[in-house]
Length: 212
Figure (tube, one colour):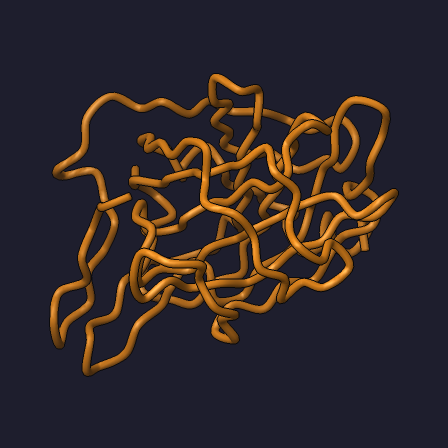
């Protein structure tokens, strides 16, 4: 997956100037109360993002990510910068009745190692496994801004569009109980244009609190 590359020594904003038709849509989750901007791929995996209405570009603002996938999926991943490499990756899988989230960043085209620049807090109310699907709902700090002054800093503009990417595989991860587990190569990757302005939540903090 290749996408945006951060501008060396500057702040690159994932905005609408070079993007095309929006592929996401607004979704109000009846379970958690969040307003998400969501994309559902051809496998039926839903990738959803919610952000505070006060969020500003170039700030490391908190976001909520929700990924819902058919139970037959071994793992699913969201790339926040629209490419496999050099951007935060949210990887999720089911472990029995639990859902595991793994923070990764790839520096080449191999299994991405753990990434401590993005910190997730699982929201219990929106995280579960049933007979047909597993779903993660979690806050993330570090998913909307990444990089450094040497390699360049990239920020997601909360009022604009940006390129996101997904990957998934049917094969289960090696050690499902371990969020640092190795996993097989993806079966499919894809990209889409995401409208972050549709993900705005005026009561973001209160909604996070009631789902904790």
